[in-house]
Image (cartoon, rainbow, N blue to C red):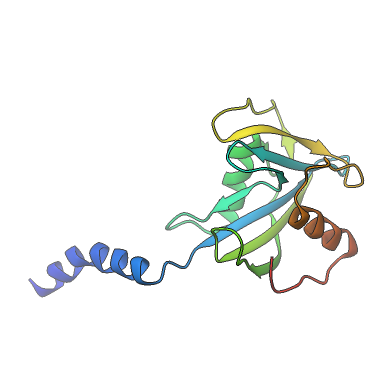
Length: 154
């Protein structure tokens, strides 16, 4: 009886812990095609062009989240697991920690149609990014091009 009660209360206790200290984890993916162009997205709910990414869901690995976000935001197929480059503390956006991944040779069978989340998306040469690419996007791509180092904060 005690064990079944513990099992029944577990979701409530976890929810309470999240309310007290909701630590969040997000991923961003520098996804390069065969030409070396990087895939960026422009959201409908915030300004600027970003690397695709989002939150890591419960019971999901960070690599799986990076692959999922690549597909959801760009219909991108990753030929291999993305490589973890750095872990950042992010004080400005809604994720506490952001894991930056990269993958090369992504394929896009068909462009993603704009919808309520993604206004535009596309591949860009790293030296010809859209003018509205965010400062953080530009910094991350410059760090990748230089082979690091990566600062501790996003």
